[in-house]
Length: 227
Image 1 (spheres, rainbow, N blue to C red):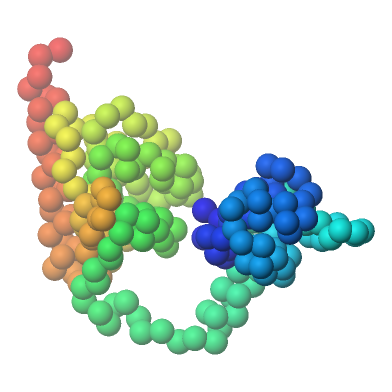
Image 2 (cartoon, rainbow, N blue to C red; image 1 turned 90 degrees about the vertical axis):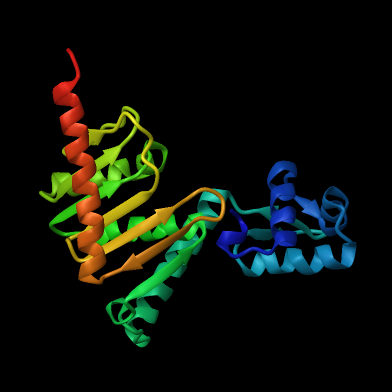
C-alpha cells in the first residue's frame, strides 16, 4: 500500500520501522531494517523529500515518521491537483474509438467497475458474485438515491438500498456491468483476472440480454418453488 503512495520498497520498509519505533538515527533505522547504512541514509532523505518523514532537530540527526493519515492525505491532495492539470493538458483518444479493450488484473478491473458506476447517470445493470459486488454497495446506493435505476443479479443475501436485487440460487459465474446502455464490462476476477470493456452497441445488447435472461430464470424459479 505504501508503494501505491509513491514509496519504494526500501523506503516503505524504513517508514514502517520508524512508525513502530519512533525517532531513530540513520544507524538505528539501518539496524532495524537490515538495510545497509549508506542505503538507509539515502532512503531516509528521500522519505523526507516525499513528506513521509521529518528530521528531528539536534545531534545526532534523527528521523521520525509522519502519521500515516497525514502523509496519505497530503499525497492524495497533491495527486488530485496533478489529475486536474493532466486532464486539462492531455487530449487522449476516446475509448469509443477503440471497439474492444482488454483489462487485465483484478485491481484494474475493480477500478473500471468503479469508474462505470461513477459515470452512470440513468441506469446500471450488474451481474456478479456477491463478494465482488459488496464493495460497491455504498456507491450503488448513492446512485439509487439520486434516482438512477440500479439492478443487480447476484448470489448470497446482499442488499443494496434503493436497488432491485435478484438473488440467484446458483453461483453467478462471471461479472457483467452495463452503464447507461452505452458501455459494458464483462469478464472474470480472481488472481489474474481479465475483462473486456466496450461501447459497441452489439456487445452491450448481448450482455444486456444475458442479464435479462438470468432475471427471467430467477423470477420463474421463485414463482414455481413451493412456499
